[in-house]
Length: 205
View 1: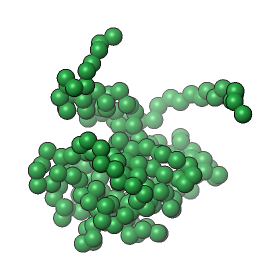
View 2 (view 1 turned 180 degrees about the vertical axis):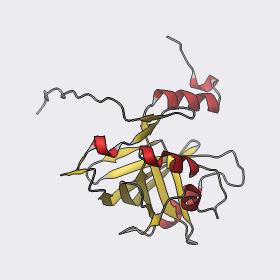
View 3 (view 1 turned 30 degrees about the horizontal axis):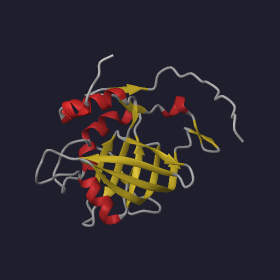
View 4 (view 1 turned 60 degrees about the vertical axis):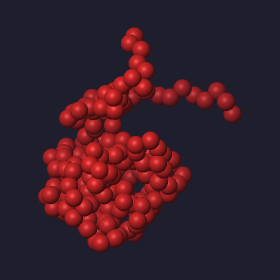
């Protein structure tokens, strides 16, 4: 085993270590709208679920190298409006998602850049990606600064699922869904072979 002291690694090296170790990661394709009405769309792979009751998700926004635009517009929009949508990325949307990852000025509409449709949401002002088969509409619960990043936590107040992938009772047909995941560097992963294991029975009451 190689012993690593995080204090002895550069930020870039630490980033490589974390993203290579924590893989594959789901991609939260986050859409927001600024107070000026400009739609924004950006992918975040430090993204996960938090709780079922209430249904809660989080994503993390890191710092940019730019001194003028220190954080992505997503963070400012969420802080100012208190809402965001999570769009989920399938194999057919991979290229569009990648195009929306561009480091662009606030006035750029990444929906247009990525060539996807900004559709009206049901319970929030932020649009969602019409081409995504699954999206959550979220209200901000907490925004927590930690080191060089912010943790954005939101409650899912509305969800929409394409009928082709929905099996009812909250179940998703993964063979139809075909989500992609993030690995490290420029790497992504397609859904591959799956296997199941039954969880051991509880030993406490």
